[in-house]
Length: 108
Image (tube, rainbow, N blue to C red; front, side, top):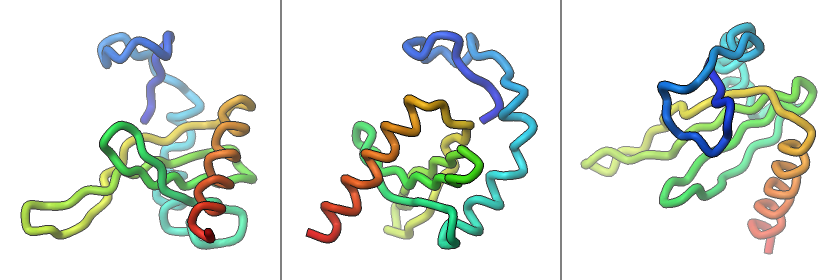
């Protein structure tokens, strides 16, 4: 949550570099999760491979938190914090389309 890959195609955790913007905003993560149902936040589910994620977007801050939905062997559900980061313009456009698609599908 506090580092970023210099090359988005490089998945090697050892090659990640600290991102000071992420470090400065680490306290925002819990606040976003707690306030996700408030005005100014968008949230939805998406699929990444076999995982279902919950995306929480603090729109006015351009900050996103990603949670993975999980289950225990006893079928108890919980969320795993995956990442959080500041959004860039191209990512905002992509997430906006994903959000609209999720809620259009959910209504239909």
